[in-house]
Length: 171
Image (cartoon, rainbow, N blue to C red; front, side, top):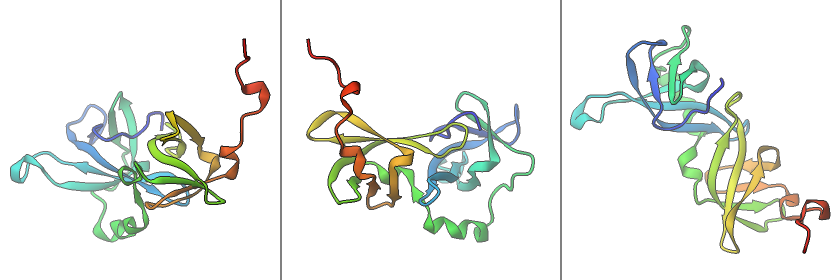
């Protein structure tokens, strides 16, 4: 794809065309750990809120910074029958503040940020905040073992000390 999907990004019907709305929410497939669909908030409507419409993440292509266009074959909007499977997806916004634990059940911290690969829209890393460490740590996508709205389970090795050759030298 080339650019990460982010809330607030503008969605166009076609490159250079009129805006359809802005990305409001991102939904992640918990097993594949890939952005699957997003909601696009169309302008207008009651109180200026407009209607939220589902669009498949694969149907969006970047055409500028924070701007995406529908691919020619995109179904807009997705039919309600197509949207029924959304129930099994995870709203990315629901992950923030959720506990991160190892496979052994040791607490690592809580989710502070989620980053996606611009090419694949797959979880590239999560940043984990902990009361014991003021700087968020990074858990790479391949270290994630399970992802739900309740918690994220990561490999036990994320709590292993860094090898000596990665530690700064004492003066």
